Image 1 (tube, helix red, strand yellow):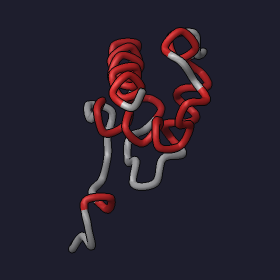
Image 2 (image 1 turned 180 degrees about the vertical axis):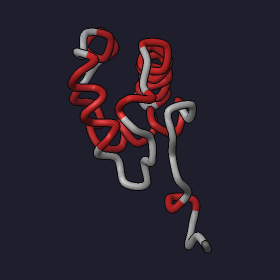
Image 3 (image 1 turned 135 degrees about the vertical axis):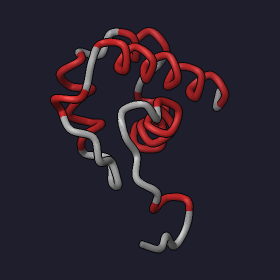
Length: 81
């Protein structure tokens, strides 16, 4: 299977930084650092599952992945301030 560019690569739960970058691209500055850490995990899971090229399954998710994704999202947000 060929990929046109880097955005075509499949993403899965361990790809915390890639997921965080996609979330920042989607939401931009709608969420500050404090708001990112207050997002309900159920909402975060739904948003992640809706990312194009995300191949992970809801059953494969765990609290550790979600916490790491939140932390990477905060770093991405800080880098863009």
